[in-house]
Image 1 (cartoon, rainbow, N blue to C red):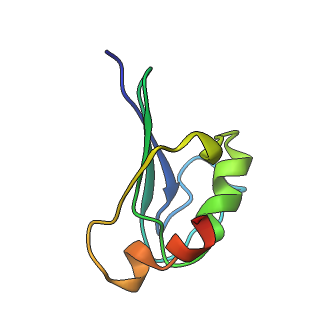
Image 2: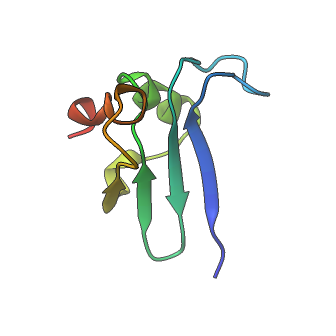
Length: 80
């Protein structure tokens, strides 16, 4: 089984200079069978980053919020 982890939000852009970077964290974890969103960053910016990375978040079946701090769960309302 292969697992792909894509960073949707972090405090740096890394090699993708067109992405929004802000204090916060969001990962998309994908397998052949399912996809999981781990944290949602501090705002809805992770949604635009996912679009720029050609990641279809409509296929996400599970959301995990590691804890209630705004920089890890602030974008949740925008996702649902």
